[in-house]
Amino acid sequence: MNKNYYAIIMAGGVGSRFWPVSTTEFPKQFHDMLGAGQTLIQKTFSRLAKTVPAENILVLTNERYNAIVLEQLPLIKPEQIVLEPAMRNTAPCILYASLKIKKQNPDAVMVVAPSDHWIEDETAFADNLKKCFDFCQNENALMTLGIQPTFPNTGFGYIEFDKTDANAIKKVNQFREKPDYETAKSFLDAGNFLWNGGIFIWSVASIIAAFEKFQPQMNALFMQGYETFNTNNEAQFIAINYEKAENISIDYAVMEKAANVYVLPATFDWNDLGTWGQLHDKIDKDDNNNGIINAKVILENASNNIIRSDADKIIVIDGLHDYIIVDKEGVLLIYPKNKEQDIKRITALANDL
Image 1: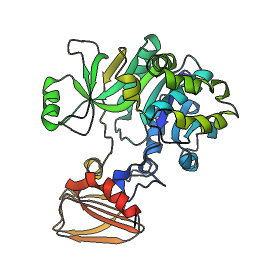
Image 2: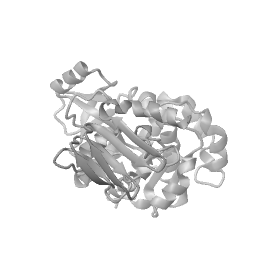
Image 3: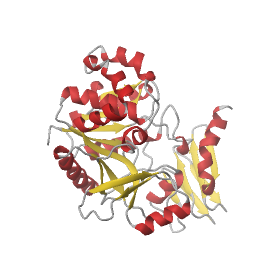
């Protein structure tokens, strides 16, 4: 396995649309959301460890999740967990982790991957990742794995690549914001648009050069502590200075500004598991399209529901169609699937009770 390969797992999100299973104290990446026998972060780690040495995988997460990561990923050492003392979006934490990696290995190439996505064909993923690593070892390139769109989704950003580029790895023309439905349809008809899945690949030299160029203030902030990185003094520097970084995503901070951006259209199935409805798409269903996770059920005149329980109880449903039914400790959620985007708002209301 190539010792220059590194990975950063992004595991700081809250996943509030999966309430009541996902909470601030225990977010969705630490749950077995599909009843597959592994949590999402465990699946992500094992998938990356097929290509990247386990000791070269860093986990970026909030301080409050440190103990959970150590418990769920026993191959991870405490120094492989990069702790954010404040929520500052993806650009600051990626720069911070990249500088730590540079200090350890200036020849590193790395992948940045979310902890809570679902990829079934892990062989195809590993093949795609190796192609990207090979490209980035030889080119000054900022790469992303673009997901082949299967329908005009208005919830994702899109990547537009050069239609005339016959190479497997395409030059990116521009990133496009989440579109309305008609615009999304036109993207699919055009044939040169991919979903932005938030998986990035680059050499440590290329990404730090991009930060120096496009985010000089943020780069200067973290470079003040460069000598402390990977030492006992690092935590003190980060505790004082991390919150000073701008709250900005890697897309806005670097990717949308850079000219050396490339995309490889992915050959694997992918789901970002952003909502209960997307989870329903991935799990096994009964003859009436009911998806059932960790639950004993009696269903009559019920269809297109997703049902989940963590308790050892029987759930009886009659006359419900297209609902989310989740039983979790002190909360029972019975909510229409077509209103699932409102669950984030409901979560805030429940927290006030």
